[in-house]
Amino acid sequence: MVHLQEAVISQSAVRDRNRALDLLKWIAIVTMVIDHASILFPQYNLLLRTIGRCAFPIFCIMLAFNLNQAIPKKKTHTLKNYFKNLALFCVLSEVPYQLFNQEPFTTLNVMPTLLLGFLLVVLGESKHKYATLQFVSLLVVTTLLSNFIMYSVWGVLLIVFLYLFFKTTNVRSKKYFLMISVLLTSLANIFNWLIGGYYTDMTTYSLAFSFAVSSAIATYIGAQFLLKGQHMNIPFEVPPVGKWAYWFYPVHLVIIWILFKFA
Image 1 (cartoon, rainbow, N blue to C red):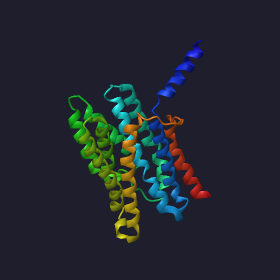
Image 2: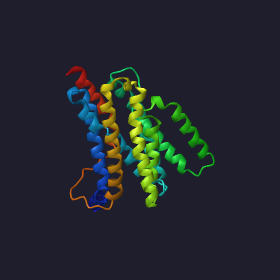
Image 3: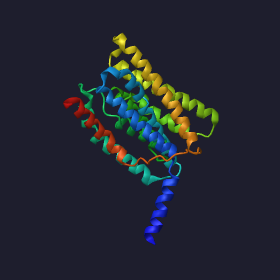
Image 4: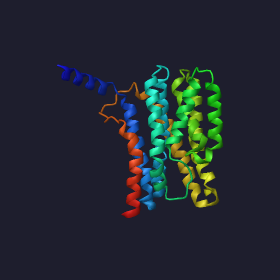
């Protein structure tokens, strides 16, 4: 009888999952792999990396959406687990990322960017006495260290404005926050191109432009899809994406690095 009840609860949990969110997770994972696999197929670099630029804004959209689900409902345990996972994989992903990067140090892996965005949103919504001071201090530190953060301070702020997009119920404000998010994701890609000094090479201009446009489109469509997808009837099963997705990031970097190095 107990096993039957557990099976019913498990089936109910699967039905209650947000299929739109799971679908976006799969799109983010696939586009991330496509982006990173570009080092294995340099002849298709422009195409693969342009597709791959969709991954980061989609990860930011999902983080902002989940924060908007957890913070108003005061799901403290969920937020603590989110923080622990992001912090842990900031550390676990750094060596795999630097191995994959194949270059002298440029930026940290993407996890610190997500963690900083998470912290700014949580501090911005906190009612604690010194939360505002902590928010401003963290934003200043993030700005000062922008060159070492993947997608810079613009990528961190992207998470904040996407959170505001999901949070507000005012239609006009939603449009403003989404447009600002589209601008931020474009700036995040262009900033990386600028600080890398690639602007001195005219052949990289098409790459920078395609990155900015691709990420902007992904931000706009992804945010709108997730906003409306909760109420849509997606007519097919979407395999759930669990905690294994955290491990997938460093592991797939190592696998691609091994293939690049030894294949």
